[in-house]
Length: 70
Image (cartoon, rainbow, N blue to C red; front, side, top):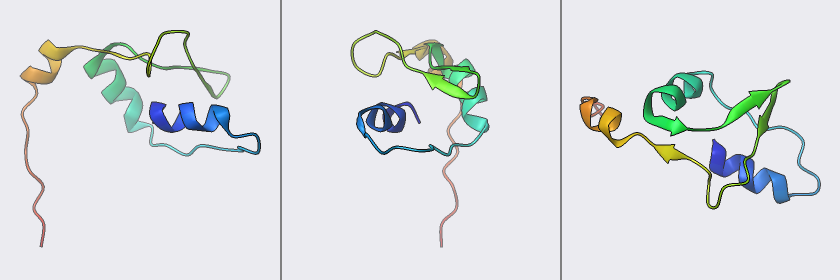
């Protein structure tokens, strides 16, 4: 989501970016610093790169379950 928002910020005729509200939960669980939403808009930070600070301890604690594919 944040990578898409970064691209959107550079496109002159950009209108809307869709994303799932589940991203808020993931953002809070897996990142110490992440994006913030202000008045319905994603606020991009001044940090280099994507501006995200992963919480590696929280990521390691999460169990991975591979989705069943057919």
